[in-house]
Image (cartoon, rainbow, N blue to C red; front, side):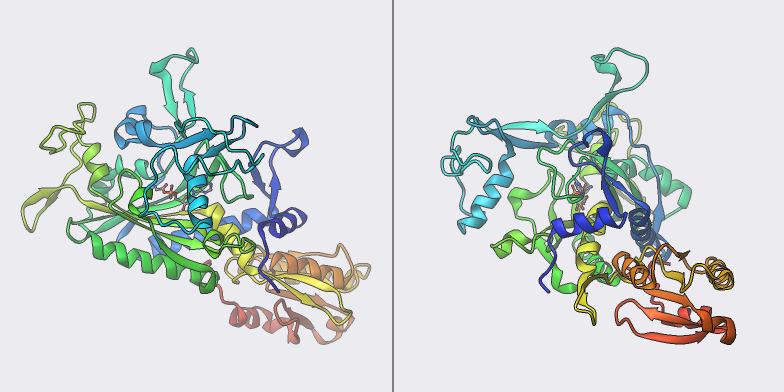
Length: 483
Ligand code: GAP
């Protein structure tokens, strides 16, 4: 079977309650999505797995949850007010609006032009056709700041003193709490601070389902190291993150590392390596099939310095008279004071959910020649771990036994009881949402106190005594790193 494209996943996601278009009854809201009963379980499994791996299983990472709305000065000194923008161009023929950098990137890939070959502006826009109408008639490029603006308090909408932003990354909430965490946790370098939370970007061209949205959730960790130890720590985190995606069930063949060229680097980054996933397998050019799942950046000492009261910058640049703290670190051993370097693994929850759905999607033909969808999610990611199904819903003894089994499993595993259809339909539904095991209670169960355990991937069935069921399932489950 060829790899599914995003459209196949959109349809499965809606049909089975993973993801719905948001505000649908009012005509929707461009590129906004709501997570349904199955979606939220998968979503939470991703976050729990990441938190467990990042915070619980290591000894050098603390957790944090900072505010979404921060003092505006945070974004002034972080550089986001000045530089967190996308270059825009409009087609003068049809008024479609595009990100100039994305158009250029696609043009380079289609025409095999490496980044080392520089264009003289306005080229290549003399050659790029509008993706909408096919004409070549562009406006000049101009920056568009991606931060969402709002106002705090009961004040006039245009009061500049009340202007604040919804955070475009969770990272800054960590930097401004560096001293708080350092002092309360009594940490020494190297150590990290992890945070999971919503971020907001007024994206110019959102789209591709949950791949790029204006509201999304990030899993970020800032790892503070001594200057000079940053490059090796960076490499370690690149390898570890790549491994982590595989540990939650994403196949290695659909992951690759991408070294960001200098032209793409964010204003704070010395080096950034992206972990890309093959989100667009249907695209002709191999290079365009891949896109970012997570970024792992070496942010140097940029952030701690820029937020410090007295940054030691010989030229007086980035001088910060507004901050009340110096975010430097004193090394007791060497008796030196310096600004730690920061390695930042930053992943998107939504893109991870999309990659998991795409990677797990498979089709299988049953003995009647019908094609069935099976979502072969890693057991730890599956929204439901076990479904308990009665073969006859009009037989109270069978229903009672099935419900009792569901209740007995629930404390250990996410289990559901379902009697809303014939057994074939119930199995098909559980396969499509990725439930690893179905437990069926039939007439014989009343006699022999045994049930049938059906495996999602092989469709093989095994008879198991009810008394042994929990142990049997525990042995067959591969739950790390999710639960
Ligand atoms: N603090 C660094 C930072 O925010 P980023 O590469 O801009 O880096 C990190 O974002 C991750 O957040 C991305 O790899 C992606 O998974 C996710 N992400 C960023 N923008 C997104 C969007 N508009 N929609 C969905 N996910 C997004």
